[in-house]
Length: 422
Image 1 (cartoon, rainbow, N blue to C red):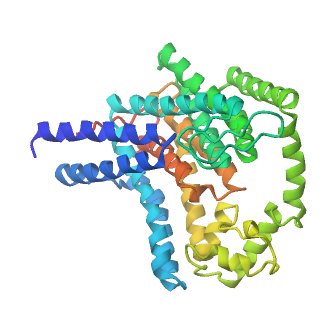
Image 2 (tube, rainbow, N blue to C red):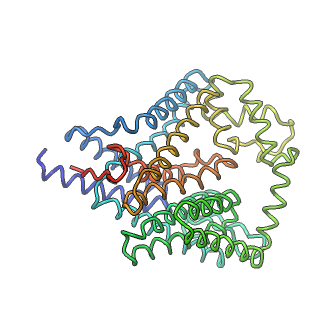
Image 3 (cartoon, rainbow, N blue to C red):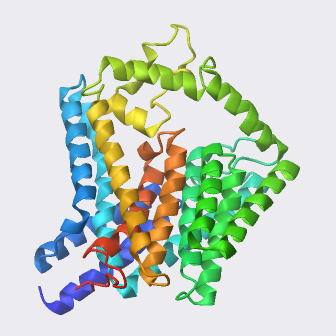
């Protein structure tokens, strides 16, 4: 393959990856079709140019991913429905987003444009979601929206559930906020305004989805954002939280009631739809299958065995409403350990990178943005199996790629990993 052909393939890869992350905001089908094309082109480029997607500097991250996937496969093969479980495990192909994203983010001409594509998709659907709340329109979907407890409707965007919307857009909002505010020394004012506007619109849309975990995650990450980048932005963060809180109390008292009332039911341990009740019975499933779990796709049957015989079908849950417990139930405690190790390694890379970089360097923005977005996602995953939700999961993989690319050749103080894509 000639250099010109390789360059053209690189450009095509960039455009399809930009389409992937733009469309992930509203269409899992278009996003994953685009990702499939990206994977084919990326493998071709890696083979022809002898590009190594697994550098030693990221060994701990990829080691835990490999162990996690291996144990998931092993638990599937040893479970009661091996073929069914393996077919479900195919969703782990979303990890491919990370090496593709790292490859493209290493190019100075691509990295900011990819964030622009992401922010554009987020802004577009956030505006649609806000309109949706007041009008009840739900284009391209036959299912009507649920009414909000105060007025209007719960925001779904183009997803099938408001929790999916809230988890996606809450995570996206803090990624974009971190990127914009940490980039004050190198982003142009119009671009910073664009990213901040996209972030604020997605925060508003998230609140209108009434997703408690996402709202709590945004509040925690906003405080951390202010603490990490200076007093001026701490006031911005606390001010944003204060404005949202006052608006919720005055305009959306039903959301306040939802936080207090549903939290009491969740933590009581008696309500069959509450989180503590679900977690207690999920622990029983784990206790019966501690090493290899029940295998993908078998949680519902194993969980239902611990419920009263006449329980409504909607209480027979398909996941544990907590990522770590869910992984432990389907792949055993070793799978959960590998999953936790992957998260510790990822957050460690972002945190260490942020602490090491000189303030004002462009890649610093990506490290902080990825850290904040990951924190919101992690908070949501304490109450939902967010990692099992493909719409939100594929966006998280993009965020991780954005935070890991500075590590491709290692991070040193005062030096920026700006390797060019060949």
